[in-house]
Amino acid sequence: MALGKGLAALLGEDDTNHHQLTSININQLKPNPLQPRRHFDDAALKDLIASIKEKGILQPILVRSIGEHHYEIIAGERRYRAAKHIGLGEVPIIILDCNDDEALEIGLIENLQRENLNPIEEAESIDRLMNAHQKTQEQISKSLGKSRSYVANSLRLMMLPEDVKLLVQKGDLSAGHARSLLGLENASELAKQIIEQSLSVRDVEKISKQHKKKSALMIEDTPSEIEQDMTILSDKISTYLKVQSNLSIKKQKVYLTLEFDDWEKLDYLCQILQQNSL
Image 1 (cartoon, rainbow, N blue to C red):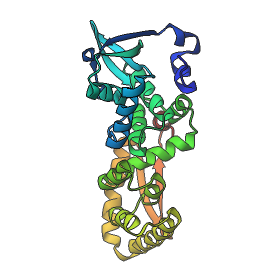
Image 2 (spheres, one colour; image 1 turned 180 degrees about the horizontal axis):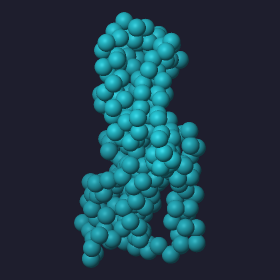
Image 3 (cartoon, one colour; image 1 turned 180 degrees about the vertical axis):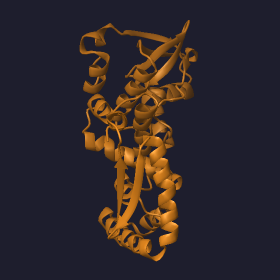
Image 4 (tube, rainbow, N blue to C red; image 1 turned 135 degrees about the vertical axis):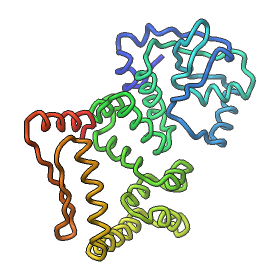
């Protein structure tokens, strides 16, 4: 079986032919609770069901062993669900020997190569690889065969309000539209406006700039509230980085100053930046 370049690279080019291809009873399979896909489109699933009824499962399901004669799905849950709906007794699988990190990464790569994940599912998976599995943006970009900027832009979607994320998941809002809303307090309101008025990404960028200018002017209007918030934020930064920090506003721009009294504290900051690939 020919695996995608990113997947073959992860598994090892010389080893891809040594993974076990077989067929098993569908009841021996168990969905992976950490699999990248969260939303299963009903229409797409119906199309897959029709295809499998006519031609069978052409692409084996990738799995790993979780006990005697039982397996957890790494990639191919849509095929599993469609086969289950039809009532197939057996399904083709490829058994891989991998840990949690590799299982998540393989599942993400397989879905990305098929372009089956929505932008939020993709961002959540990359975020999980970084935080739970200690992967850097550089490592992820190489594994996925994507650019570093692609990974960074995907992660930015994690900062959206939950209701806006849901609109992106449903396909009502594009990733480009969503990124234009980042950092805006009224992002949810603007998201509805985008859908109702069919605004282009360029339209949203213009509106976004106008709102950000208004927000910048508000800094001068409420200095006491801003100063209080900045003090709280500065304290959090100091606690997290273990250094003295100071936030200040000059000409509608926010400046962060960090004070290091020894090289060990600076080295600690470098380690944090390296881990998160900032």
